[in-house]
Length: 598
Image (cartoon, rainbow, N blue to C red; front, side):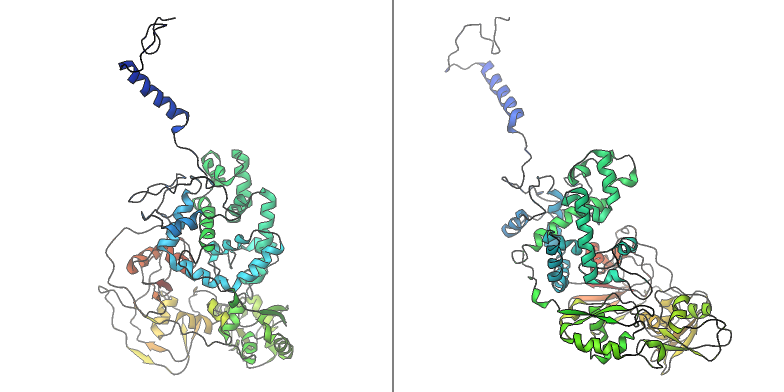
């Protein structure tokens, strides 16, 4: 043993407490280091303890606390603005699904919370406005199954409570069911009807599916993530990493050997965004948002329609506008119900008895000669079911089923062609019985200043016309030539999409304008994949009329969602949410995009 202790004193020597020694300073420093290692370092503080909201003093962080890059479609960057007292209280509030989260686990939740509260308030207001019409039914459905009430806000993330929402992957409705899952839960999908868009039936299906997912994982965070990522991916991820929770699975994501089984950027942020929405929804007043008025929820009753019921004629007979009928029944894709089976119709409860009596009284659409939801097609010599299908956009099987005819076709005979329900559904229509159709915002397209095109002189036409599709034609160019909207052409020809075939005969609605043959051919727009490089705003912004701070912009050749966002100085994420699109949505010249302007 050394005769000197750690401070250099001989063994047994007593040091004076008043005497300064250099070794005493060294010992003091060493003691501080040891204390720091023992417990003075950073701790994993949960929201139950003295939670400290960690916010950067300025600038935008490159990565979040989860290690994921910020400033993307899936994870917004921090805006550098500190939370107010009310915002801090709202963020620290806890519900059934966001308890006992650590500082790191709440890091991404904070980024979504700040973005929605500071930058994207319009989306919150709009989604909450739509939600109030369905929330009482959603709450009651969740309650009846013993599920947490805040699961209702999955529909906020999925569709903004819009029953007509459709994704590029084919998911549809307020709860965004893909086709196979929708069929598994009893929602029929065909040319006539898509029951995934039925807000009531799809809500019951969503509650059943969420209950199943919770039974599989016994954890709501994993169940909610599985709703987005798929139960199989979550099961394989847990097995590969040995994880027990969502946040543990996310931390170990790179350990999963199969890249197909790893969580995508969207999967990683689905739960944090959902939790942020829950915190906002339970503190709407505190955060300055409009509180939901659940008394505005419509009182509806379900009645049954016979096969082949003319829905437009039914609505008119009941004194309902088509917009009101479509708002209550967004599942219908045609103006005529399915020709071979009965279907359900939702009507205001006060009209239930009258509506059922009217549905019994109305004859099947195929037996009459004049119906609001059908138009006549006179068979010409040489026509076949296939050629008529190409001209009208109606599948051959549906033409045969509706008209009960077989080939060869007899020239001069008349077929019934169902119209396509292209009417958008605004939830506000649910609150106004028999409200007149709201006028769509008209948008005049302005040519690019450097375009070299011969001026077109419109000529008024008082009667409908027929246009034969030629090489280079697009729905946009045809609509421009005749001075009508693309939607009007689609409706007049019973078409579901913009696809055209050479030689196809299109019926042009009356009242349009025929334009001289000199015309420019619209080039197709590539699918949106990433933001374009920053550049000065183009001078070709379409002229738009403002309506409740929302305008409709006509897509120009070469436009992308990100380019449109820059033109109007709005957030790309807000643009995606407002139009129920995602980053891969393709745009065509002539399409209209809704933009919320300041």
